[in-house]
Image 1 (tube, rainbow, N blue to C red):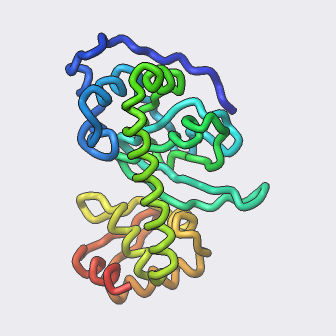
Image 2 (tube, rainbow, N blue to C red):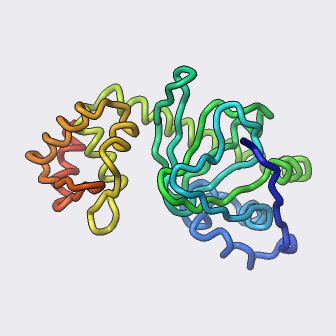
Length: 237
C-alpha cells in the first residue's frame, strides 16, 4: 500500500518564522516541549496531509517511511490479533505523535494507524530524520522523550483497562472525546471497538451512564449535559 511521496523543504535553516507552519503542534503535545532548533527543523522538514475518515496512515508490515503528528481530527491505533482481527488500543487526539519506533529501528510497522475521522496530520519523512540525527546526534534525546511519552501512555491505558469498570472507562473516554458543547460524534459500533468490548456490553454501560450521569444518546452522538456528573462516575471507577 505504500507509495513514494514527494517532500518539500523550502525554508532556510535557522528561520524561526517557519514555526507557525506547525500550528497547533508548536503548542500542544511532544513537539511543543522540544528545543526551538528542533521545532524549526520539524517545520522545515515536514508537510501537512489530510486523511479522509477510514484512510490508513500505515498498516502492519508497511515500511517505516515517516513520523506523524496529529494536528486535527482523531486517529485509531490498532494491533493485529490474527490474520482477520484487529483491535483498537488507543484513540488519539491532537498533539499525538506516532511512527518513531519503527522508523528509528529501521523495522516494519507492527501496528496500524487509521484516521478515525477527517484528520490533518503533519508528516516528517524518514530521510529527514536520519539526516538530522547524523548531523546533530544530540537530538536523539528528543526522540527518546517521544518514545517515553508513548510508552507511558501504553502503560496507563493497560492500567485503566485492568483497574476500572467498563462504565468508568466509558466515562473517561467520553470526557476525552467531547467537544466544547459536550457532544461526542461517534457511532456506538465505533465506540465499542475503541473500548475493546462488544456492542451489547457497551449498551449496558451506556444505560448505566444514562441513569448515573445523565448522558443522552442519539444517532451518531452522545451528549454530556453535566460534565461534573460524568467526571464523578469516571473517578469512582
